[in-house]
Amino acid sequence: MHNRVEAAYALGAMHGSARTIALERSLSDKSESPQVRAFAAEALVVIHRKVTHGVLLRNLKDSSAEVRFWCAYALGEIQDRKALSTLRRLAENDNRAVKGWWTVSKEARDGITNINRDRRLCCMSCGTRP
Image (cartoon, rainbow, N blue to C red; front, side, top):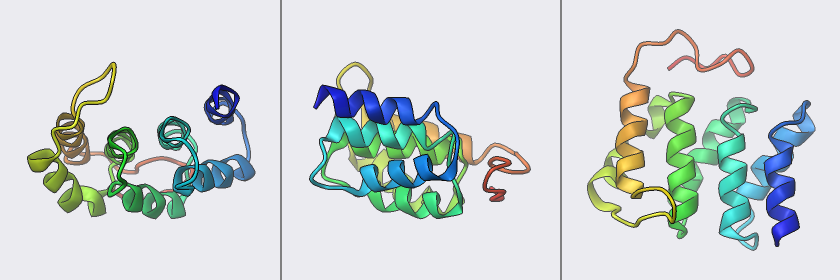
């Protein structure tokens, strides 16, 4: 598993759409370890496309607190307004802590704050408006 975690982390530093697709698949693969899936969600902040928003949003409902935490982080960073209702629910109800970090609810609140900031575009790669 350690090698898969490192590979997911390294994909985030590479270029090209194939890596984005690979990270989206890793995040959505329920048979993959939560740690690998969490690294994939975090990496997708930097290298995503329009489709990625939906992948992250779907995984906000994952059974793993670590995956929910990093999807909340990613959606907040890319300022996906479609995530607001789910993030609000997590902010109110998800008090699971992620080792080395804080609770999913705190990360969801931080995501909501980021989404509500005034920015013109989430990024140049996908061009989604907040």
